[in-house]
Image 1 (cartoon, rainbow, N blue to C red):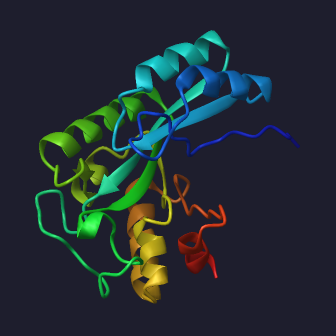
Image 2 (image 1 turned 120 degrees about the vertical axis):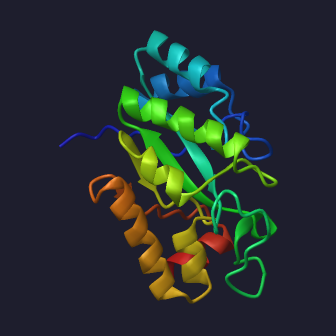
Length: 200
């Protein structure tokens, strides 16, 4: 059994107001801990992907290119707030504009699909943030691994709102899009109350 550990949900300073790690020190720390690989999953952007890929390879660390995507609740062309509850802190993020979904490329084809998704999120889905939707995810899912994202993901949001059947349906839809071997539920506990409300 291997004792190797790999971080798969990582924000750099390309994640505005949410990440402070610069790529060189991040990779130096990963190398210092003898991590064989590390992911980059910045919020809504792949701006750091090439620098990360190049510098990780220089350190003999496998770079995993990813993104913490913003997902439009009613489709990328719907540019109005969407609420599933009363609109409080436990409801959809960005004042009803999006939920979160973490995507990781497992192949070159997956990385190209990620670039296509990211471009479409800016060109077609922008509404306060660059947003993807289920339609284009289904078209570009090959070579990608998805997780339910942070506390702002649809599954976690639905659970906090007491909408358990809707949470199961959301997870089932993602499993159907990405395949049962390529979709996972993220469980986080950083001591933040909103995370704890989803895992009680």
